[in-house]
Image: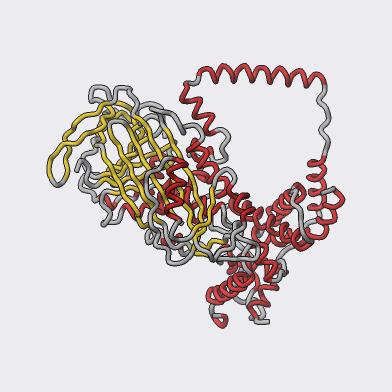
Length: 449
Length: 157
């Protein structure tokens, strides 16, 4: 045996002996698991019953005080395993899904070649989680996922559960379609049904017809009009699509749509804008100032628009988007401010993110035996990530559609005496957020153009 | 599973489960807790096993996952204070050092090394536990050994 292998065998001698106390602890745990619960004594039962009645009464009073929207929010998130990601972003561990997605995608935005464009971290996470959920071995850490199977269910449920048919209100609709392409792979229908429950649909298709099948699926499932992008598959493979449709209307609470002067380096102009406060009555907005940028957030209704505004004379591509997003989410403060955001519309079809995500792609193999017959093993490497997006911010609110194919912030009291002018009169980044989770990121280098 | 059946399994596999847990966690207390948790998951499982080997491999898979969950909680591996150099007093490659270098490997390669050298498993079983092909398990082992040689350097490169 070569010496290194021999030494590796010897490392086993470094492992200490099993502590004797382990047996006793094991016995205690087993006893604890099998112990029959004894009935409570009468006095304790009375105290417990009183406490339960008091709790129920208190809960009922509290619930009655909630507004309609707040109730919906509570119902939407309380049962989801990923609720912390969506509701409480103070938790570093569960916040990482969003941060990782922004981190992975931001190089594309800061590329000098990319002008007005839009990306969707949400569908990227969805597609990756979808693929991960049906594979046997996947580096979840690379995507910031915690438990892929639970994450994909939570994301789908969060975005589909309550808001699917509210005319005039926010809605999100999402889906994951996992698809095997090509005849190489032996397909096991029972396994497909087992993994498709709740959150995923799977079909086997030839390379030529998969796009048509996927188009129909998304149109029927969530009314998505974006066409499935051509992946130009080099060989037979496995494809996962994460799809999201979002719409939210601006609240009619004194916010104004105005035709505002807009200064751009090419000259002076005007642009239709969303005015979020008037000078005489500054509104408090969540705000963070970074080294070469400012970040603030305007509320739409159930979603938010987070604006990353580079300082004047700073090249938009030199702003660290991941840092801006992370710092804002963790450290933003409420400050009095006024300003406006110009309306914009970004659309991009078949955006190839493969090169941007090269590092992720080359370090992950996928094992699909969950879907394949037992005697077939196929080890695949992700070779393409393509995204199509359409996002618009206008006088009605925000609307966006996205498809990826694969493959929080308050403080009390004003900290600034003088209101800050947050007029967006230069190129900027716009994040559409749902409870701080980035659904879309827009780079607007030529607003009003 | 009855308590009696479980006791039998526990006595059969406790050393193996503790060794795998310790290989990942390098701390007796953590390894002890991971071992207890792994056995409890195994005890509560309603899974039907086709064979003894299938059952053993399932328990190993549970153990690896449990140990990795603990690793996330403790975030960083404790420093291996036993490492004093590349070679021991006899001029041979120091096994503490070898183990510390294994920590540098990427997760999937580390899994193969631990299963091969801590649990003494054949490639067929490693493949079954990691849900990969046997050929890929061999390939991972080959890459892991090659990487270890490069990391150790000297006569081993």
